[in-house]
Image 1 (cartoon, rainbow, N blue to C red):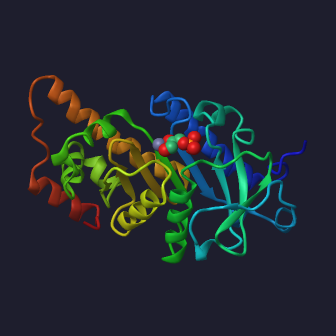
Image 2 (image 1 turned 180 degrees about the vertical axis):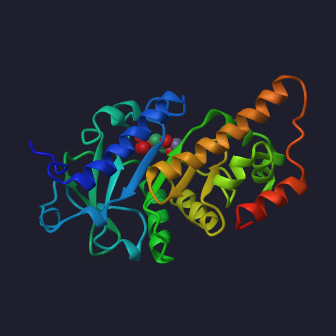
Length: 269
Ligand code: 13P
Ligand code: ZN
């Protein structure tokens, strides 16, 4: 069977980036079994021939109305599919979907009828929010980093901006490359509409959102950028945990050092 990636270098490059990141997530130990998911908005890489493709599934309800997604296309990890398999065979473990005109359902158009991730309501809500506010962001990622998830099991870390300040102060790069910080969503059932809604509330202020006792979500221009923000935060968490395991509480950068960084890098917060 011919893949829709054939003779479409831009689409193939974007899917290859998702596959590359899927490999990183597995190597980092963040993607047990089918843990985590990614979606990218590929609408700009979709041509008239793809638009004319008949659906290979029926119409499947999203679970909520997303008015900005009408006729948009996404590549999504499949539900119950492993990241390590997505890394090797992206089109067997992911699917291209088209949002229907009603904005409440989607259909699968290629390559195989792989059902998208169970976190589709959260992913599509994030894309809908981003398009609605005129953002150029095209990628969303959800993964289960051990260090960051462990930190959400401690109530004081869940207070607004406590983790942001702590992780920013571990190493200058974290503040520079995750400049909007880390939002917190209190525990919600995985794949629920409540989780999706709580996540987009946090996106107003943050590009990365922790899901208490579950995982982390990030949005970015592309999948590499979204991954890099989580990776940078995880590096800070590792520095914190390493210091604690050596028997001391890390000092963290001073307020003056943080302020100097904010001015030097022209950071928003
Ligand atoms: P999926 O396999 O449906 O993508 O679910 C994985 C996950 O991490 C749910 O939160
Ligand atoms: Zn998850």
